[in-house]
Length: 308
Length: 134
Image 1 (cartoon, rainbow over the protein chains, first blue to last red):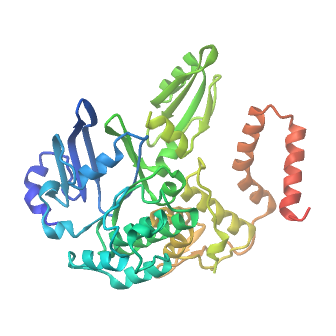
Image 2: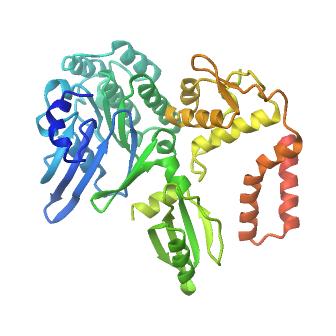
Image 3: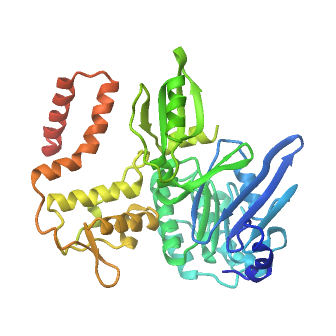
């Protein structure tokens, strides 16, 4: 898949992780700010063509994680590899395969979009002028107005255009739609779908807008307590996760009898309990019984349950 | 050709998007809106129109193919399978409504609504849906 395969295959026979074919792989990553540990022995891999939504509460460290995986932030421990190369020592060809939309970019405010894109174009061996022109027109971005004078939404669109222009194999987006209205978000999602259809781009993005994530993220990853608490296809999570409620002892017995894994539980009034559980992949999900209610969950429920 | 406009998905649901698509196609075929040989939109068209991940659409199509609702024609297009020449009998179509009604029944029970009240609400909604002007 990438140039890194040959160099890493020797030890890959003995170590299952990191996957040498992965676009991104992190293992044992630790990042601390003073006494506060943000990433705590985090392991993660993104395979080519995966579209992964990264979910976590405010302050969970999503931006820190995305910056670390891009090699923009030095990690205190662990390894980060992009296309089989150490993230901190990427060569130019690997660098050219990455597109990044940061949460906030207030650089180049004095330049016009045309000047800024011209400047970036000079760094990349590949640059799709037709795509850039098409998106600038479609998204109504003034080419000759200083970037600092564009609206927040237009600046965000421009950052997306910049990240897509060199047709990256890996696209990293940190809250890419926060300033966009619903129509702008839909345009952006369509563009993302096109990227995936036409280029098989690996995509990771964080957002708090769960409805967007649900549409395009085939996989979701939950960041909690400095680690990826769970990553799985969203379909599978919705189909295997249930909320149980009833008398505490009955709920616990029910979960145990059906070999369900507890994800989170909350004590309710009068000795009752609510428990978010996941069935083993192949087991069918049991119906309610023995005083225990069984209900399906939405992505929002999963978010609340898995990000603490 | 089944138009992409016929398809819609709801986010925030406990029903995965591929499942929603599967159920929609089953309903079109059972109701006779889509018949044997009718072509479905391609994965690409549907993914772009709904702004959903193409893998989600292919997953739905593969499942429908395995169930014998759709067939894969040479190339990429999916068509409604040969045996679905006409709409299914009403009794069979009604079965497709069952999961939705089961969910409604569960929620009515949680709300402690008497059956008669739940039924009269459903009748009212049916009337509104058939004739939106009322």
